[in-house]
Image (cartoon, rainbow, N blue to C red; front, side, top):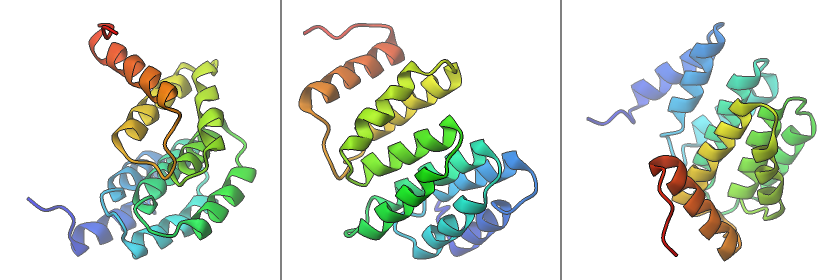
Length: 167
């Protein structure tokens, strides 16, 4: 069944404007299936700066990054997320921005992103690991250092299975 229809997109955009935070962040997350959709990208770019809830903003930024990464030229998008990052006050917003910047090709974003593994908040650490796993599935504009990628893959494997990889 194809869920990527114009009707489903319009329903999700409407839900992403709901007064309930949980409804908005679930809708933002679901909108990430619309790769390279200019209407969805523009919707995110209008919604992100206005989003009041830190979790909903996190999902809006990460979903925006996931649909934007497949574009050929992301220079304007990098400028956009840099502006967004500068006004983030919570770790959720900062984590999402560093994820987006790295995904779009800013290698320096990877080190900043990894620092969230040291957060005192276990939910931030857990989401950092989840996003790291997502980064390993995708082909970011910049490839992390080979050794960092190897360690990250081993860490994710250990978390998923409880087993170490034989080297």
